[in-house]
Image 1 (cartoon, rainbow, N blue to C red):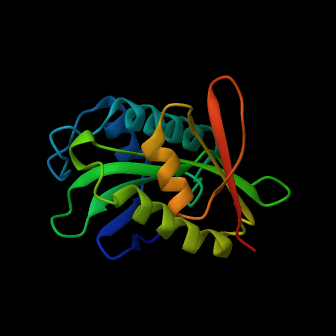
Image 2: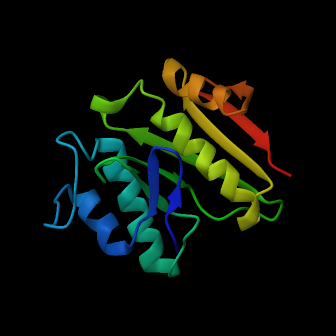
Length: 163
């Protein structure tokens, strides 16, 4: 699977080995990680991708993607699907960035990159959710066209029709 490129980012589909390193928080010599990468959320997401790939085989493009800056190749976060689309073409996505690069538009840019590619992968509707108090993530989803649909005691839910 090829990298997706945006203006400032490389969205790199994880290999299982890369995901295992991120999950363990142990960089290999070829890894170019920010000092605060991976976050705990990124470690959990990478671990889920690695386990899913081990049990189901290759899951890309519906797995984890490392977000890298084009300017220096540094890994700054992750974005990924929670699995393949269901029978209606609906898939759920999550994302996160290292604290040191938040507030610079990278999450919105990465999400827009995935939104642009997703219809070509058969995704008809994309969903996302965020903690009730995570206003920055809510703003990212809204800036990318996702619409608030509902909330429960813990999360706010968003969605967008792609086709």
